[in-house]
Amino acid sequence: MSVMVIDVGALDQLGQDLSTVSGEFVDANTKSDSIAGSVGRPRLADAVRNFAHKWDDRRKKIADSADALSQAASGVADGWREFDQAGADSLDGQAGGSSGRKVPSPT
Image (cartoon, rainbow, N blue to C red; front, top):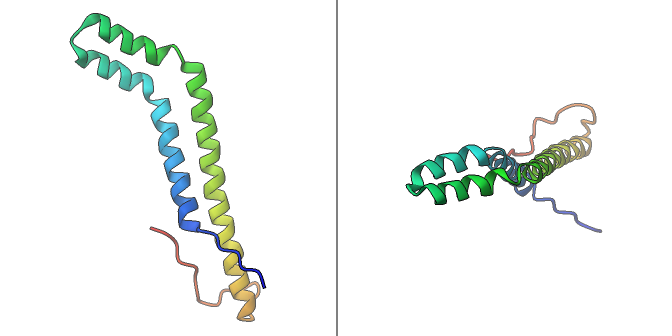
């Protein structure tokens, strides 16, 4: 008999982490402007701003991809939990109903 182990908590964490990555890319210009304002040297401040602002299109593509992967990872985790619960219910003779046992959700 084969055993499949899915680390649902890791999938949830991956979804959260990718969402954070996406947010960091979206907020990069604002953060670079803030950093540039703190540098104290005009040429260095311009370099910081230029670096961040010159790759807006690529950064948006990366942010969109990270967001899509985040949603996919979270969806797989949710789908696996539902599948696992349905299997547990059917083993308990409760197909279509709840056995009262729940698959623990990660916190």
